[in-house]
Amino acid sequence: MGKMSDDGATSRRDFLKLASVSAPAAVAAATLGGPAQAEAVPGKAGGGLRDTEHTRAYYESLRF
Image 1 (cartoon, rainbow, N blue to C red):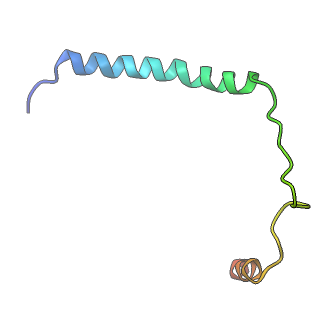
Image 2: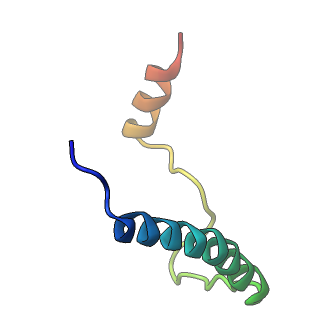
């Protein structure tokens, strides 16, 4: 097998350095960006799953 060039190893190291710095920075930016406001959807009252034949079948399949 051939010897790996230094360019490949250097670019891999640079990528890992950048990834280790940019991931926490992205999380911090998302966190400090302020709370997200949810908008109400007109015509929809309440949340969660609706009691339908499909949801009942799903819950039945979960029973042991």
